[in-house]
Amino acid sequence: MTDWFGENLLAAIKTKQSPICVGIDPIVDLIPDEVRKRSSSRLGGGGQSQADLDSIFDFVTAVMGIVAPHVPCVKFQSAYFERFLWDGVEAYFNLIQEARELGLMVIGDVKRGDIGSTSQAYVDAHLAGFVHPLAGEDEWAFPDAVTVNPMLGLDTISPFVDAAKRLGKGVFVLVRTSNPGSAELQDALLADGRTWSEMLADHLAPIADQEGLVGPSGYSSIGAVVGATQPHTMASLRKRLPKSIFLLPGYGTQGATADMTRAAFVNGQGAIVSASRSILYAYKDAKYQSIASDWRKCVERAVLDMKNDLAGMLQAG
Amino acid sequence: MTDWFGENLLAAIKTKQSPICVGIDPIVDLIPDEVRKRSSSRLGGGGQSQADLDSIFDFVTAVMGIVAPHVPCVKFQSAYFERFLWDGVEAYFNLIQEARELGLMVIGDVKRGDIGSTSQAYVDAHLAGFVHPLAGEDEWAFPDAVTVNPMLGLDTISPFVDAAKRLGKGVFVLVRTSNPGSAELQDALLADGRTWSEMLADHLAPIADQEGLVGPSGYSSIGAVVGATQPHTMASLRKRLPKSIFLLPGYGTQGATADMTRAAFVNGQGAIVSASRSILYAYKDAKYQSIASDWRKCVERAVLDMKNDLAGMLQAG
Image (tube, rainbow over all chains, first blue to last red; front, side, top):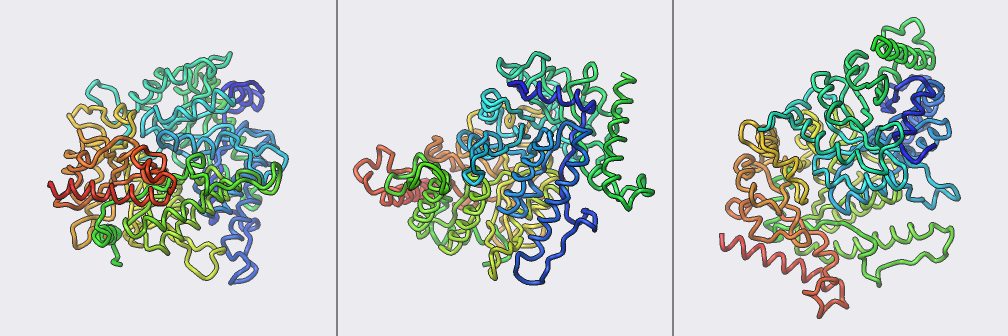
């Protein structure tokens, strides 16, 4: 482990030979039946929501055990934990610790963004390694990196950038998202000919290229989220953010292919592709129908297929 | 209580005769000494962070008791609770329940924003009245409204808008924030002559003006956050969003004056001004030096001064 998140992530990608981040989006209704808990009684005793949270805990733990030999990184989607209120937040942090014990790097997909000292409070909450007394003697396991929403202005991400420098953490700034409706606001054409996202990238570039953030490989701990579904702008954003590792959501269920991520890679590195449902719930995919009764095998097969798919694209160059 | 959040908020403003929202930004170091807890031992037993959280709980409860007769609404800044991890989240929901018992409307300042079913999970987490089993027989008290970050696209706020319709909840969409660095991205000039925020407002207007959201007064349950510090664009945004109640942060500590909020009001209504530190920590303000030893009195005086200040501006027209 070096002092740079970016460096550590690139090394982990190399070790596992796969630029893949498995997105942990635990949706109760999609969890395989054999893992689902049923509440033991209709009323009281925690009820269905405790049973649901237990299902999530067991499912995510099992998934991480399956993917850990094959991928460097997992990304936890905070929303699916927050919906179980404080119990969910506790589960989120416990599962992050599980991930780290499995040797996985962890991105907290929290998309926080606020101003001044509120932004600092979010750093304390999600990145900075606040030592929670309930964690006992161990330092509590926080994510290695988080996603950040920059809409309020790039001044507002300073506390995250400072934490990245000081603690070797990483930050992925939303630059161009993967959803269909993102074009309306993010591709808005400015008077100077750039899109809004391109302008955002231009403001982010010097922030990423600061001393203390860029490791020997030339990549920064300040990365960018760019939807794999957006190939029309990928090359432009890559050029504007040469030091940033791109986190590319949208592969699989959202429709992006390996080919659509090509422009994010430079000499085969500098990007990591995220997939969530196409891996977690592969047992529901017609493609894996013949092994659908073994959801664990489906998860592993989906990861290996994705790995081969990306390797093929990178070898084709 | 009507079925419309917007209607209920306007009625509460009228009853209390003050378009004021007190921002609950509990910063431990600023809490008056007499309220501050010290951990009983240096190690273990919950330690300082539990003592800090207890201080916050007592301080916020006391502040709400003081302001409840004078203002219709409080706004909880989620970050300051999240930094105490799951214990903080539990305190956040407990304090929201306290607020509602005091007859205050509650805005959860969570600034969430994500895509598709993740956005729905955030609705479940922060707005939709998910009944937590630990809440026992009572329906758990969720905020009446939340703030939402629309950067990912206005399609992504649909689950929040649906919840507003279905449950009489409110949504405040960030349109133009109060911080100094916000201009860089939000005032970016588009090729068509609008600023990026103006374009965002134009996309938001038809969403706010839907059946089931607009009450008899003509205002919608889908409001907009517009920094009181941004008078240069206030009139333009007001015109573009005629049905939206404006939530105006930035009064007081951030430097906005009553006069700077004028363009947000139409015939004396349609906006609510938020102030946090200038009220909560008024005992530190030189203006209240003569009563600084009584922090409670300072809180009350600061609210009444703000109320008079806004009333003067509104009467001047």
